[in-house]
Image (tube, rainbow, N blue to C red; front, side):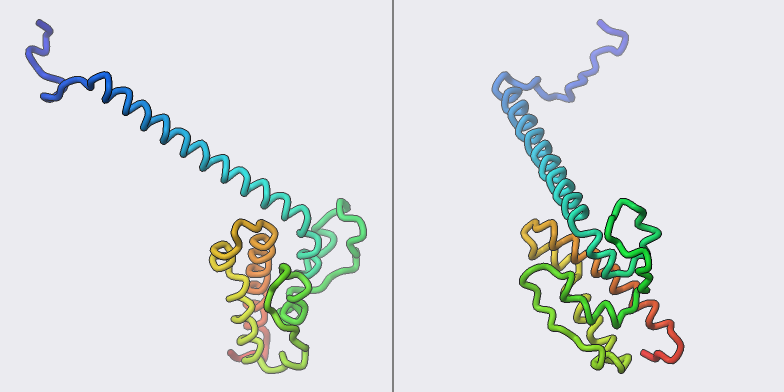
Length: 171
């Protein structure tokens, strides 16, 4: 007898039979394959995101107004005098130039953006179209569309927050 006495460490359970053990192994193997497939799919999404970023970042940076100095010399043709700020009016007027194919954004003239309430209305409309959750749900894993939507959403929100703080703007 052991020093622990007659304690039953199986707590009244019988050891698994040969059939139960093989079933547990199959379940474990099946779960392992599911996890492996999940991580493979996630890596594929990351690779697609990286590809979209390489392909589209220069175009979106120019639209947003990222200064050439912060981009560095790796982007030939990027105008070093390009110093446009994140002006919400400019972004709304040119949004159709950076959106994905098949978007439903209608061209907005600068004359339509004289009133701060109209700017607010168009900003909300643009945000609804570019919202990451909405685009992710509808995009069917189109990495370019998701990347564009994420960058546009962030840029529009940042620019609108700056616009709200401008003198004379009451929303």
